[in-house]
Amino acid sequence: MDTNTLLAKLKSKGIVTTKELVKCKISESTLSRLVKNGQLERLTKGLYVHPESTFINPEDFDFVFACTKFGKEAVIGGITALFYYGLIEQVPTQTWVIVRKGTRTKDRRFRLIGIDKISREGVIQKKNYKITSIERTVVEAFVYANRIGLRTAIGSMKTAIKRKLTTLNKVTDTAKKMKQEKALIKNWEAVIGAISS
Image (cartoon, rainbow, N blue to C red; front, side, top):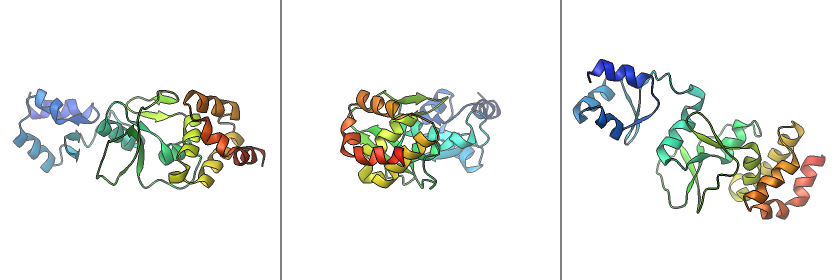
């Protein structure tokens, strides 16, 4: 495949791996030249994207990048999901990603939440990334209150219910399905206070 045909093909694709490029019979020297000339962007080791890719919505780029980098199980969550749903105003400085425990990165663009088994409960599959549902996002704000802040968790619950984005029943039901009721029960007075004020 000649370079122009390859670049046209990559423009209509999302993030591609070195493995995929090797399948297209691209040599390392050609790959280096394409990156050097700005015809291909190297995101991190082994991941590339056409700078004018039409496949990825620019607003979703960080989410797609995170889920591609950390694998099929990776899910956008935490502070990033709270902001996505408009439950907090502060723009996150990192993309928060739920990953399998033991996953590491030195890349400061990401904040990892490592867990033993990633539950499929409350995970929404978007075009090319996954994100926690609004209910799971609120539940996990309480689960990870030591990292996120209890005040942020309470505020997100209050905002979600006041704006009628969800209900207390839906949130508690999700917590039960995830076996995370303790996080809500522990802060039950604060939860009730948040939705009644």
